[in-house]
Image (cartoon, rainbow, N blue to C red; front, side, top):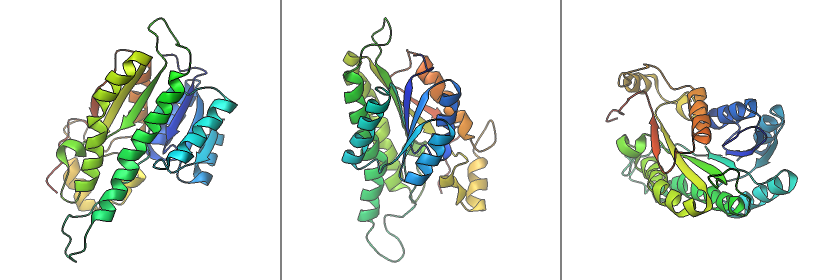
Length: 254
């Protein structure tokens, strides 16, 4: 798919993986719309790229639908949609204080899984109404963000791993269903990346994780993620698949 002049929506686009993706797609000529829970951050990041920003909680379907409606009215139907919005939670099922953690589990799924589904649902409906872009009948591509935690979640990551496992599990059925409309669905499962989510990790945990990264032996750079997004967009045969982006790492037990 051609990136130049194409409308791209990036959720969580004001920082980390989302911001790097927005910057890379903008460099390739895309028109960038950023959705982020912080309106100020979304607007500032988008304006720096000549785009538009919206303060949106991705688990709020009305807010997501409203943003997509404005993007379509102001520009055109988004053909590239990348979901990077998410929260990282670390909480044991049975913490030492004995408190129930059900609310925390529900919040994590609402943002990471329901939010990704909501964006995909609304994006697919918009793409379905648009004309095909090429002889294959392509109408767009949706890229969701999972995590290596879906396979090797650590102690305290039950909620996070479950939410990202859901993102992984819906990738193939979504791609199969939307294939009749020429819409591709992919997911990227990053390892440990240099983002705000990982910034709070204690040094000892960070060191333990890095011991398990064969090559390159470093934290992922958000630019690595953004590069893969571009490759997915441009390669029409990438569809219905989850790509681990982790330097062959396997997360330690804890």
